[in-house]
Structures are given as C-alpha cells and as structure tokens.
Image (cartoon, rainbow, N blue to C red; front, top):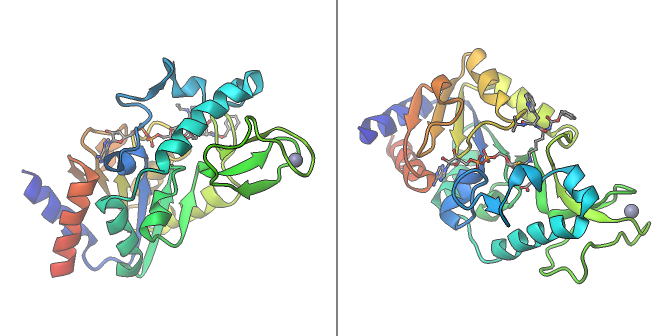
Length: 247
Ligand code: BJW
Ligand code: ZN
C-alpha cells in the first residue's frame, strides 16, 4: 500500500540532520525530458551508449552535436516539476542537504536548488577539446556545428561526461564525502546502472544510512532501500513533503 510507504519515508526523514538526494533522468521525466534507458532512449536508432562516447565524437563531431542540439532545443521548452521543487525546498528543511545529480539539464537549478553536484556536467556548458576552455552558452540553435573555440580554434564539445571519461574533479569527491556522512540517501529516478554514481547507494547503505528509492520501477540498487516508493517522483515526493510539513 503506497500510503504506508509514504508514511514510512516521512518517518525516516523526520528529525534527521544529514540528507543526500541522488537524482537521475527520471526526476525530469514528468517535465517531458526523455530518460536514457526507457522508451525514447534511442536516438536515430542508436543506444545512448553509442553516442555519448569520446570515440563517437572523434569519429563524427557534427553527428554527436546534432544529438545534443536536439536535446538543448527540447530543454528550452520544459520547466521543473513538483519533484524538482520539493528537492529545492529540502535544502532549507534539513540542516545538511546535498543534492547530487546525474542530470545535465539544469532543471534542479531552475527549481531553485542553490548547490547542485553535477556528476555528469551540464548540457549548457561547452568545452574546447583542445585547450579545455569552458563557457556557458544557452544559444539554440548554435550558429555552426561543431562550434569552434575562440581562443585556440579547436573543436568544442558539450560539457558533459561521456562513458570512459572522468567525472569533473572534486565533484565526485564531494558527493562521496556527503554520502559517507549522511543518515538518509533519497535515490530518485535513476536506473542506478552507471558508475561511479550508482556506487553512492552502496556507500550510503554500507555506512549505515537509510536508503529511500523513488521510482516507478526497481533500480539496480532497490534491494538496498529500506523504503521503495513505487511511482512517479512528481507525485510521491510532494506526498512525503506534505507529511513532513505537517509534522
Ligand atoms: C522515474 C520516472 C518518474 C521514469 N519518477 N522515476 C564498473 C564500475 C565502475 C565503472 C564502470 C563499471 N563498469 C563500467 C564502468 C564505466 C562506466 C559505466 O558505469 N558503465 C555502465 C553502463 C556499466 N562509467 C563511466 O564510464 C563513467 N566514468 C568513469 O567510470 O570514469 C572512470 C574511468 C575512466 C577511464 C576509463 C574507465 C573508467 C562516466 C559515466 C558517464 C555517463 N554519461 C551519461 C551521458 C551524460 C551526457 C548526456 O546526458 O548525454 O550520463 S550516460 C547516461 O546514463 C547519463 C545519465 O546521467 C546516466 C544515468 O542514467 P539515469 O539517470 O539513471 O537514467 P536511466 O534512463 O537509466 O533511468 C531512468 C530511471 O528513471 C528509470 O529507473 C525509470 O524507471 C525512472 N523513472 N520515470 C521517477 N516519473
Ligand atoms: Zn580552445
């Protein structure tokens, strides 16, 4: 019975001091952003694993840029949903609250989250693959593909993390540290198959933190959760928040 799970989640969160939330593509699904591994997780018939790689970019930067250009275009038309908004409110509800996201869409920022640990970078950052210069650019469409670095003439790339690449320096360290110290980890809308992000769930559980999962389907780490809230985050997180509010 979902009402019991919602109460159980609220009971775990009530009165705790250190909370971490780990989010994935599912938190943005109700905003209309497609997830990676669900229906619509293919692009021109290709799994994302074949487009989101340095090898794919080296082979055909324009093709990979078209994939990101299309996603940037769609993102100009979407807005944060109630799940993003609850997580933004939680930064002021708990004495220590760390928001860790695998998403590159910046919808958490749009909802008012002030500090977001972006494990996989941002689709709104553009980085030179030669000199490393990075800039925020929300122009859609970009005037030319691929964009070219104004400093060195190198080919620019989306400021995201592809398979086989290291996460932005310091970001994973900060996420790991917060997760080691937290009392509760709330895992929202991720299949939890991509590392090192998925490893945060193991770190939390092995450190004695309670894990709450919010996902219509079981993730690869659902067995580590004390409470599994099976349903859409945009409906269930506001329900949990309402119980905390009434506490
Ligand atoms: C809802 C919902 C609703 C729907 N409400 N929920 C073993 C250990 C460690 C590493 C590895 C390992 N084996 C392999 C690796 C390497 C690799 C990896 O993990 N591969 C796995 C596939 C096995 N990892 C890496 O390469 C990482 N780097 C790294 O490890 O560096 C060290 C290294 C360096 C050099 C050599 C080797 C290692 C980098 C990973 C980068 C991932 N990049 C992407 C693309 C980002 C850019 C872009 O956006 O284009 O990140 S891939 C893609 O997957 C994206 C996502 O952030 C990431 C995770 O996906 P997510 O968010 O979980 O989405 P989905 O679609 O999978 O799931 C959505 C969920 O939502 C589902 O569960 C739905 O049910 C749910 N849902 N509606 C709530 N309304
Ligand atoms: Zn450059």
